[in-house]
Length: 267
Image (cartoon, rainbow, N blue to C red; front, side, top):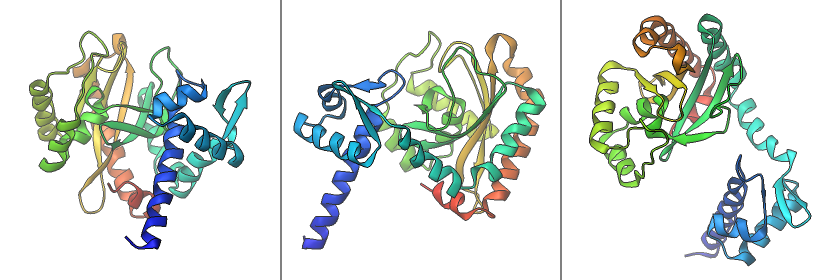
């Protein structure tokens, strides 16, 4: 390996460690000690310390007593993507339209490994349940958007997903059996949509459809979701599917106008 390749590899490794430290913080871990960061990331205490100090110098991490927490500057990383991808112009108008028509909430997500990553969200209210917001990730198998995205994967990529599949019962009715999930994905692939009821958390029912690029490749998914006791799955499809598909088609058409967003969605 040349000296340039070695430097490039070292840079990539350092960047990956810094991102791993940032991702260690979350809703249940807003403040962490050095040892906790090391444990979560799998780094040695010395490596975790170096990365925390670097992030602190850059303004992305702050220290309170002996605990570390993310600084507001971290928001610039996510907002830079949203602005560069023109999310406000390309996606949010359609999510707002869906919420205006049906209430509740609407979101857009992509597949990141074994999870979905929310890249856009609009809601009429914030319910007392798992929060769907930009930057949040959830297991793909337990969400409608995750299932429709998994259904669109080529065989080799789906096989790779199953190799990493580590399900957990998030509710009493969460489907974790591979054979049952395979049947659900096959039906989603055939129908072009899928419904999830109380899979991720109690009280969440959602309907999702794929979003395709100009080449016909599925690059994201959008959904409409609401409170389970008020939503019957069959009625949800009857009332909302057609409009959700209209929005997915419009977003797909807009991808051609916003190449930054279109290219970023390609895996």
